[in-house]
Image (tube, rainbow, N blue to C red; front, side):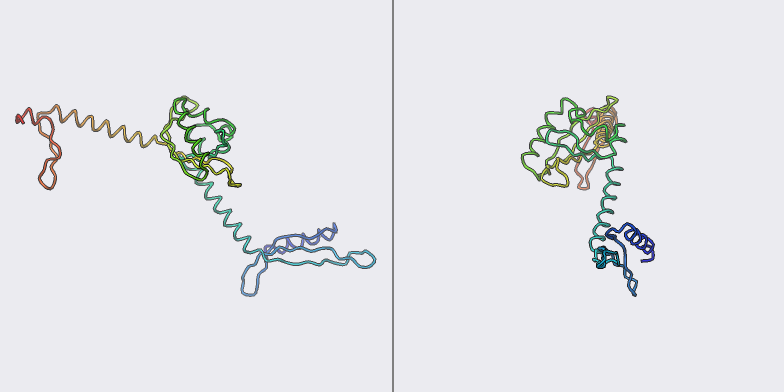
Length: 239
């Protein structure tokens, strides 16, 4: 491959100068333009007087491995981008509830860097009154590896004292050599709780208006049946 020629020549010449084994990954291009990744390796060949006369080697097709590696790298980059820019938190705990990992987005959420969180306990952040329930879920997950458990709504105390509500899912994957921990995916409930409060306040205002007005407010279905009639009906019509 044109982009690899200089690299291969330099590596080969360096191996000769140092009388070392030649080892390098590079690309071949056939007449049709197809690119094949190979792993080239060559050992030193000496004559009867012990002088270096050349190299004897081989080139092994590693295209499949290279493609798999590139796909893995792309997937890891996508995953990293997702967890770094998500309001949700991805965490990894050891069996004692010590943080082994937390997504970098924790900096945006709490102002605390991931590096400062790793090594601390969930008890350092979960609101005291909610720690027992969180620990109970952790114990269940440890008892049944591979099964996912729902984490009921719990509060996290931010460094400034603000409480943030979360809920999540927890799965123990200690047997997975690539993870070896308890994975937690937690969702910030702030927006959902704010929407619920706004709806409740709206309903309270609506109820206050309809209960204290002389007008009659009603909701009528397409079948002609009243689904709601304001209490003012009693004052106006006596029903």
